[in-house]
Structure formats: C-alpha cells, structure tokens
Image (cartoon, rainbow, N blue to C red; front, side, top):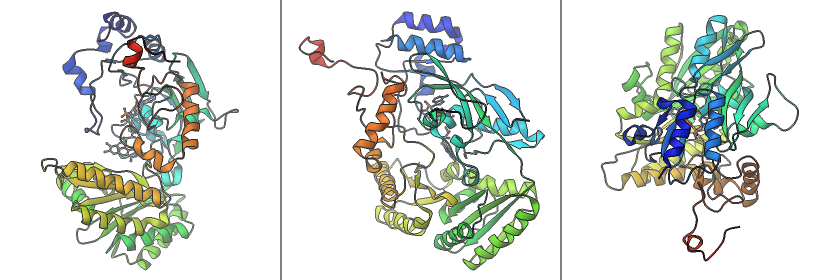
Length: 468
Ligand SMILES: Cc1cc2nc3c(=O)[nH]c(=O)nc-3n(C[C@H](O)[C@H](O)[C@H](O)COP(=O)(O)OP(=O)(O)OC[C@H]3O[C@@H](n4cnc5c(N)ncnc54)[C@H](O)[C@@H]3O)c2cc1C
C-alpha cells in the first residue's frame, strides 16, 4: 500500500490535479500501444517543469516506495517548445512535445526536424530520446541520437545534470550518446536541445511496383550500390499493400508483389539527375511501374499509405504483432524468403513493411486472439523471426526498443561480458535500479538480484539471513 503521506507530499509539489490515484483513472496508464503487457501503476504524477520532476524524483528516491507497483512520472504536461534558434539551427523543447509539432512550428521559416517515426503525430520527444527513434528519413539523416545536442536530465537521486551542449561534440564522454536509447533506465530528460535542418531545395517521391519482393530488394541494393543515398527507401509487400489501400486509398497497385517508395532530396539539378538513375535501376530490376508524385498532395498521399501501414492491419486481421528487427541489407531477399516459409509453416499470415534502405524490417504477424492458442503461436513466430535476424548478423530491434517484450532476446545478441559492461553504466547512474526497473536487461546483474524496487526475501523477513 502506498503511504498516504507520499500522496500529500507529491500533491504539494505538483498540485492536487497533478496526482492521479483513483483506480479507474490509473487504468488509462496500464499499458502503451503494446496491450499484452499491462500493469496498473500505484500512482501517476504529472509535473510541468524540471524543478517539479526533480522534487518528485527526490520523494521517490528517499526510499518512499514501500509499494508493489511503481509511480509513473508522466511528462504529458511538459509540452512547450521553449526556444527556437533559427540562425544556430536548434530548438529547445520539453519532453512531452510531440515530434511533428517541431516541424510544424519551424516549417514556415524553411526548417524541419528530420527524425520522423511513423508515430510522429503522437509520439513525444522524450520517448524518441529514450528509444533513439528512427523513421523513413533516418537512412540519410541519422536517428534521434544524431540530432540531440544536449539535455537537462534528472538523475535517479534527484540531481539535475546538463549533458552535451548547444553545439555538437562537447568534450568528455559522450553522455547524450549513452542516454539516448537507454529506454528511461538512467533518469528523465526534462529539456532537450535538438538540431534542426534547412528544408532541401527540391524533394521528389516516386513509387515503383514489382512482381516480387526479391525484385524490389534488388532495386534497393542497386540504388545503394550506385552510391545514391535517398532520403528514404521504404518497401511494402502484397499483404501490406492490400491493407494500406483498404485503409487510406493511397493509390498503390493491388496486383503486384511489392511496392517501393523512394524519396530523393537536395539541390534541384542533383535530385532530377539522381531520379533518372533511380528509375533506370528500378526498371532494370523489373519495375512494372515507376510513378512520380507531381504535387505535394500526391506526395502526401503516397506517404500516407506507408505511415498508416501498422494501423491498416486492422483491416485484414483482428490482431497483429508488430515486430522490429534489423538485417544487413544484402540479406533482405533471404530473410524475406525465410519469413514466408515460417509463416506458411505456422499457418499465420505475415505482412512486411520496412525501411528497406537500412535493412530495418517490420514483419506484422497477423492472428486472431479469439482462436485458442493462436496468440501464443503468433508470439512464437514473431520471436523466431527475430532470432533469424540475429543469425543473419542483424539486431533484435531497429527503432522500437527492447522494453519488456524483447529483453529475453538480449542474450542472443550480447555475451555475458557485453551485458556486464552495460550494467556498469546503469549501476553508475542508477545504482538502486529505480528508473524503469525490469526493462531492457534480462536479469539485473551487478546492482541487485531482483528487478524493480528491492523486495526482501522471506528468510530475511524471518531474521534468518541478511542481505549485503
Ligand atoms: C503505429 C506506430 C508506429 C511506430 N513507428 C515507429 C517508427 O517509425 N520509428 C520508431 O522509432 N518508432 C516507432 N514506433 C514506436 C514509438 O512510437 C517510438 O519508439 C516513440 O519514440 C515512443 O514515444 P512515446 O512518446 O510514445 O514514448 P512512451 O511510450 O511514452 O515512452 C517510451 C519509453 O521512453 C521512456 N521515456 C519517455 N519519456 C522519457 C524521458 N523524458 N526521459 C527518459 N525516458 C523517457 C518511457 O519510460 C518508456 O520506457 C511506432 C509506434 C507505433 C504505435
């Protein structure tokens, strides 16, 4: 049970409305988009500033958590773009700012924020920093880590640390690099300084369709081998195309095996020359159609299909698992064949939507929860796909992170020594394992034997043993 004085203390910090303790309201926070993991938190706190986050963390750190559930510190009320500095190409934002808001704010001045997860209409910069989020345009421009210059960061003991700075490459250890992608296990980012880019002079988007994913994969390899770095290269297979068309009518052809979206940006002359070469490469690989978006509306529509792909699966299946794995680009045709074979053997459909340029796959395993045992079979298939990615020299996640779902796969990628080194970092910054305990790492190794806040063993409680 949560001690009533803690609720009072937290209300003193964030105000009465800033603390949620009613069970029915807490249920809103029981899961994220991955609804098969649910835990109702003991309390939700909604701070609005770094100082409030710091004070809340201090209350938690004082050992004031004799509870089974944890406290969720929601940053949803920290939604201000604090500074726009166009001459120096940077912005300072609070962590609850939604990714797309940044571009919306600066696009009238000819600037944009490059990392563009498909969830960019709803995901926060804090979440992007924690997950090192990517998106279609990260092939050319890099992931979130390449755009974070600095951060204000509340440590698990309540100290506020400034990492990085207003410019790239601060001296000393690359602390922003350690924090970005740490999935909230090291503390809380409360202000983030981000790099923004000038809008390119020209952008051209084309859709190429192919009979097979093999042929589309060959086109992708050909484009990259020719030394062209498109702003984005995305692929969808037949099932994904069908679902997207049913959902948003993006104008993709339905009688093909794969569609590629290729976007080029840069100086106008360069873009038009490269576009010709991309078309030649696609045609040589067997493109049935190569269609250019002639207006902004056509371009938006082409992208709308791709960006809606996950949600569109609801049109073709009652349930689905979104997988996220990486393979070396050259293994693309092989892994797609393996996924097809695994799907056939399991009797479950798999749709493929992915960032083809950087080998980041998103196989969507379709199933029906109402059929007994099928959810488990889908999880098995999804897990096997990830193991195959690792076997091809890839990774268990490209951009969605490890979290709870994938921590058991960490052992497939890392040795004991690797994981112990990761733990040294966590122990240095979060020694009591207070922030996002039980996430990312399969078994905490060096600083505590059990995940989450320390739970005394029954023999300790009985006075028969002591913990050192
Ligand atoms: C339909 C859909 C499409 C998606 N497409 C993409 C994609 O293209 N690319 C991609 O990379 N991801 C994608 N994702 C995954 C997800 O949207 C991103 O990882 C996103 O960055 C998460 O942001 P969020 O605001 O939802 O974070 P949350 O779910 O709120 O948080 C995610 C994690 O970050 C931690 N965290 C949040 N804020 C902070 C902070 N300020 N300091 C420290 N830790 C913090 C939380 O504790 C949690 O562990 C997609 C998800 C969906 C549902």
